[in-house]
Image 1 (cartoon, helix red, strand yellow):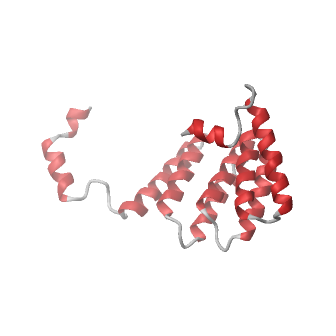
Image 2 (cartoon, helix red, strand yellow):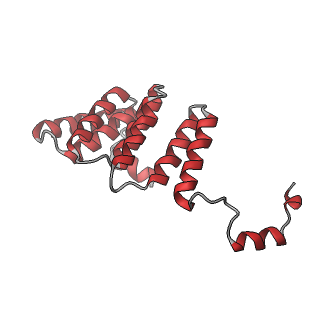
Image 3 (tube, helix red, strand yellow):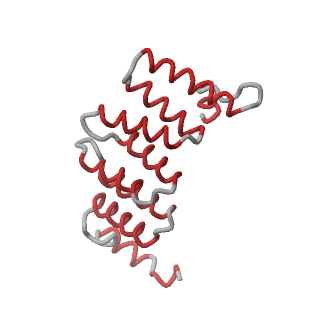
Length: 164
């Protein structure tokens, strides 16, 4: 799948992967000049910028795209968070994900889980743990993980001492 994606965006041109991406960016920029504000072109251009390491341009493009949408979308917020993380912006990356909670189509547990992963990658282990706990609570309710009859059967059959 990755190879197909690379071929699709033109990364394999005479053995120089960067050259293909640069050419892809140029084509997308030209197409966007012909169709200003086209959401599909903005998305493709943001991805291409991110793939070439042009995070500032990717962020700018994603913010433009975000401004056109009635509510935040996961794909835009996640790519924006990834670009901000790549730039080292520890506060802005999770904040972009937090905006997703405003969207009626968002699965909150997924937002908290991704924030947890992001915070762990940023070295914020305690905060990552808190986000993962929020994800668990949203997904399974505020009960403990071992609260169903099945869990009791499991504990009786496999005492914890076996796992130590």
